[in-house]
Length: 124
Image 1 (tube, one colour):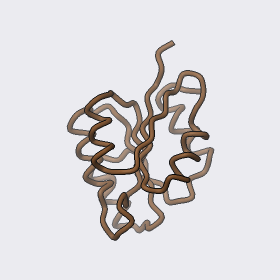
Image 2 (cartoon, rainbow, N blue to C red):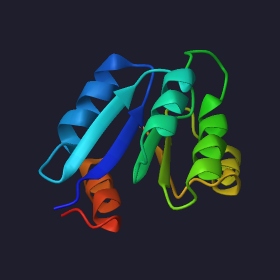
Image 3 (cartoon, rainbow, N blue to C red):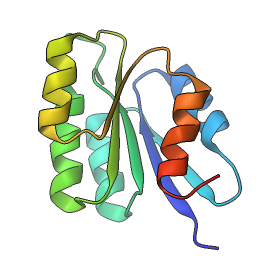
Image 4 (cartoon, helix red, strand yellow):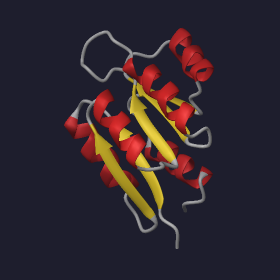
C-alpha cells in the first residue's frame, strides 16, 4: 500500500495535535508544522498529497496561508490544498480559490469535512 502524505500547518499546537489525531490512520502519514518557513522546508523535502494550512500562521493579521498555497502549487500542481481560517469572509474565500486552494473551511472544521478530503485522494 502506498501511503498518502498529509501536511498540517497551523501556529496553534492544540490544533496541530487535533488534526494529526483525526487524520492519522493506516495508509496516511501526517506531518505537522507551525510556521510558513517550516512548511516550505517540508514541502521541499517531501511530496504531499494534501496540505491543510491555516490562513494566519503568525498570530497577527497576516495571511501567510496564501503564500504557502502559491509555494506548494508551484512545486506540485496536483497537491490538494485546504485553507482553514477562524477569520473567514467571502473575499478571503474568493482569494483562496484564485490562489489555488482546492478547499476552504472556516474553523471549526468538522470531522466529516476532513474525511471527505481524505476520500478525495483515495483514503477511506
